[in-house]
Length: 125
Image (cartoon, rainbow, N blue to C red; front, side, top):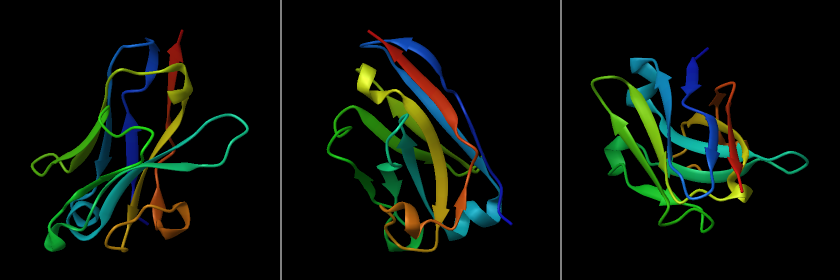
């Protein structure tokens, strides 16, 4: 069972920034594509951003709703994936989940093999 642990959530005003972190084991980090999803109250879990498998290039992918405002990145030395979010809006309020997948470019929740427990981001207006 792979372990993923998110951190960095919190309360921020609209227009502000947050950086979420996801710590993974080295095995997970090296062998899986990584992604961030979010789930707002009463809504389905939705894709935010993904890092493709490293050996196919490790390209980044973003949902249209966050494109230009979010950046997914990795720190190989720390086995950590980050989601830098800026120009936050109240509609970005959600629990943000880190996930790992054997799929090369995972953008759907059912493509993910492992999930973290999530970290809450609240954006006030």
